[in-house]
View 1 (cartoon, rainbow, N blue to C red):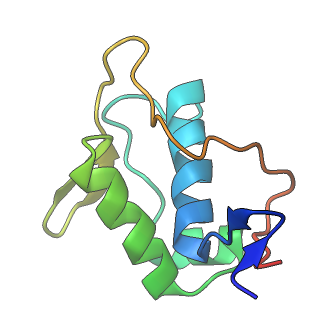
View 2 (cartoon, one colour):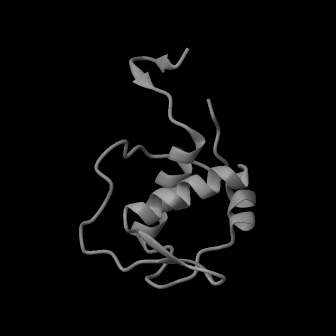
Length: 99
């Protein structure tokens, strides 16, 4: 059941990562702007905090955000044209669904 129409099913962490990456890239979050708290992001995306942590970890590892202990996570200024190069699918709505 992991494959549907020849494509692997993506995790909620992948979906949140992609949505947040798109928001950063579109300018919804400005460089050096503090991101909402994990709790607030979990409410916004209707997922658990561990899912949010996974997405934030990936954004941090790929250089899209940086974190400061006790201060939160912030958007890193991106070089023009920088983006993820795989699984760049459009998602609609604010809630994430596993289906």
